Image 1 (cartoon, rainbow, N blue to C red):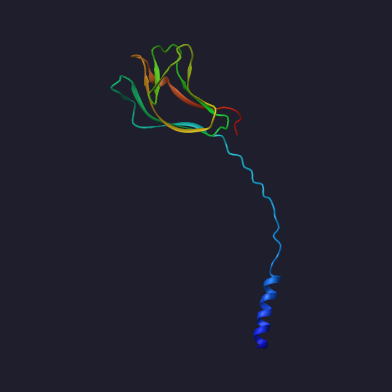
Image 2 (cartoon, rainbow, N blue to C red):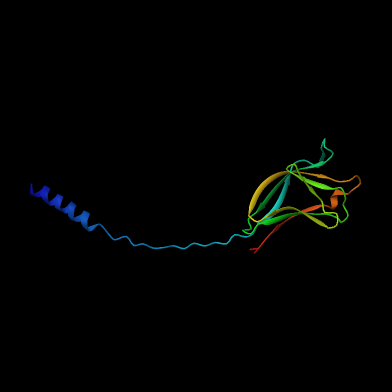
Length: 139
Protein backbone atom coordinates (compact mmCIF):
# COMPACT_ATOMS: atom_id res chain seq x y z
CA UNK A 1 0.00 0.00 0.00
CA UNK A 2 2.86 2.38 0.78
CA UNK A 3 4.36 1.68 -2.60
CA UNK A 4 1.10 2.59 -4.41
CA UNK A 5 0.72 5.89 -2.47
CA UNK A 6 4.27 6.99 -3.25
CA UNK A 7 3.76 6.29 -6.98
CA UNK A 8 0.50 8.26 -6.99
CA UNK A 9 2.11 11.17 -5.08
CA UNK A 10 5.05 11.11 -7.50
CA UNK A 11 2.69 11.35 -10.50
CA UNK A 12 0.79 14.28 -8.98
CA UNK A 13 4.01 16.16 -8.18
CA UNK A 14 5.49 15.56 -11.61
CA UNK A 15 2.24 16.67 -13.32
CA UNK A 16 2.14 19.93 -11.35
CA UNK A 17 5.82 20.74 -11.76
CA UNK A 18 5.85 20.00 -15.54
CA UNK A 19 3.66 23.03 -16.33
CA UNK A 20 5.76 25.87 -17.74
CA UNK A 21 4.56 29.33 -18.65
CA UNK A 22 3.89 30.01 -22.36
CA UNK A 23 5.65 33.07 -23.69
CA UNK A 24 3.84 35.09 -26.38
CA UNK A 25 5.83 36.51 -29.28
CA UNK A 26 5.14 38.20 -32.59
CA UNK A 27 6.92 37.31 -35.80
CA UNK A 28 6.88 39.83 -38.64
CA UNK A 29 7.36 38.49 -42.15
CA UNK A 30 7.65 40.74 -45.17
CA UNK A 31 8.44 40.04 -48.79
CA UNK A 32 8.65 41.83 -52.09
CA UNK A 33 7.53 40.21 -55.32
CA UNK A 34 8.92 41.30 -58.65
CA UNK A 35 6.42 42.98 -60.95
CA UNK A 36 5.25 40.61 -63.64
CA UNK A 37 3.21 41.96 -66.51
CA UNK A 38 2.93 39.96 -69.72
CA UNK A 39 0.75 38.71 -72.55
CA UNK A 40 0.96 35.21 -73.99
CA UNK A 41 -0.80 33.90 -77.08
CA UNK A 42 -1.89 30.32 -77.64
CA UNK A 43 -3.51 28.74 -80.62
CA UNK A 44 -2.73 28.03 -84.21
CA UNK A 45 -1.41 30.37 -86.87
CA UNK A 46 -3.71 33.32 -87.70
CA UNK A 47 -6.80 31.98 -89.43
CA UNK A 48 -9.55 33.61 -91.48
CA UNK A 49 -12.89 33.53 -89.68
CA UNK A 50 -16.33 33.40 -91.37
CA UNK A 51 -16.90 37.00 -90.22
CA UNK A 52 -13.97 38.18 -92.37
CA UNK A 53 -11.75 38.79 -89.36
CA UNK A 54 -8.47 37.03 -88.67
CA UNK A 55 -8.46 34.91 -85.54
CA UNK A 56 -5.33 35.24 -83.44
CA UNK A 57 -6.19 32.52 -80.91
CA UNK A 58 -6.32 33.06 -77.15
CA UNK A 59 -4.57 35.84 -75.28
CA UNK A 60 -3.59 35.29 -71.65
CA UNK A 61 -2.82 38.42 -69.68
CA UNK A 62 -1.06 38.40 -66.33
CA UNK A 63 -0.07 41.45 -64.33
CA UNK A 64 0.52 41.60 -60.58
CA UNK A 65 1.00 45.37 -60.35
CA UNK A 66 -1.08 46.62 -57.40
CA UNK A 67 -1.98 49.77 -59.37
CA UNK A 68 -3.16 47.87 -62.44
CA UNK A 69 -1.93 47.64 -66.01
CA UNK A 70 -2.57 48.47 -69.66
CA UNK A 71 -2.49 46.15 -72.65
CA UNK A 72 -1.50 48.03 -75.78
CA UNK A 73 -1.53 47.17 -79.47
CA UNK A 74 1.38 48.88 -81.25
CA UNK A 75 0.71 49.53 -84.93
CA UNK A 76 1.64 51.85 -87.80
CA UNK A 77 -0.12 55.22 -87.99
CA UNK A 78 -2.85 55.63 -90.54
CA UNK A 79 -4.61 52.28 -90.20
CA UNK A 80 -8.21 52.94 -91.23
CA UNK A 81 -11.21 50.70 -90.86
CA UNK A 82 -9.23 48.43 -88.57
CA UNK A 83 -10.40 46.85 -85.30
CA UNK A 84 -9.26 44.42 -82.67
CA UNK A 85 -11.94 42.04 -81.43
CA UNK A 86 -11.43 40.94 -77.82
CA UNK A 87 -13.98 38.43 -76.47
CA UNK A 88 -16.43 39.62 -79.12
CA UNK A 89 -16.00 43.33 -78.22
CA UNK A 90 -14.80 45.44 -81.15
CA UNK A 91 -12.07 47.98 -80.30
CA UNK A 92 -11.35 50.43 -83.14
CA UNK A 93 -7.65 50.86 -83.88
CA UNK A 94 -6.67 54.52 -83.45
CA UNK A 95 -5.70 55.68 -86.96
CA UNK A 96 -3.94 58.88 -85.83
CA UNK A 97 -1.67 57.17 -83.31
CA UNK A 98 0.88 54.38 -83.26
CA UNK A 99 -0.79 52.47 -80.43
CA UNK A 100 -4.26 51.55 -79.21
CA UNK A 101 -5.13 50.70 -75.61
CA UNK A 102 -6.88 47.33 -75.43
CA UNK A 103 -7.25 47.00 -71.64
CA UNK A 104 -6.89 49.70 -68.98
CA UNK A 105 -7.25 48.14 -65.52
CA UNK A 106 -6.75 49.69 -62.08
CA UNK A 107 -6.29 46.26 -60.49
CA UNK A 108 -3.91 43.33 -60.93
CA UNK A 109 -5.32 40.72 -63.23
CA UNK A 110 -5.15 37.31 -64.81
CA UNK A 111 -7.51 36.66 -67.72
CA UNK A 112 -7.77 34.63 -70.86
CA UNK A 113 -9.56 36.12 -73.87
CA UNK A 114 -10.35 35.23 -77.46
CA UNK A 115 -8.73 37.69 -79.86
CA UNK A 116 -9.15 38.51 -83.54
CA UNK A 117 -8.30 41.42 -85.82
CA UNK A 118 -10.03 43.07 -88.76
CA UNK A 119 -7.70 44.88 -91.16
CA UNK A 120 -8.28 46.37 -94.58
CA UNK A 121 -6.96 44.37 -97.52
CA UNK A 122 -3.26 44.78 -98.17
CA UNK A 123 -2.30 45.79 -94.61
CA UNK A 124 0.82 44.01 -93.37
CA UNK A 125 -0.08 42.47 -90.00
CA UNK A 126 3.58 41.68 -89.23
CA UNK A 127 4.02 45.30 -88.12
CA UNK A 128 1.63 44.79 -85.18
CA UNK A 129 2.83 43.98 -81.67
CA UNK A 130 1.28 43.70 -78.22
CA UNK A 131 2.67 45.08 -74.99
CA UNK A 132 1.71 44.76 -71.30
CA UNK A 133 2.54 47.84 -69.19
CA UNK A 134 2.27 47.89 -65.40
CA UNK A 135 1.01 51.07 -63.73
CA UNK A 136 2.61 52.48 -60.59
CA UNK A 137 5.85 51.32 -59.00
CA UNK A 138 7.79 48.50 -60.63
CA UNK A 139 9.83 46.11 -58.51
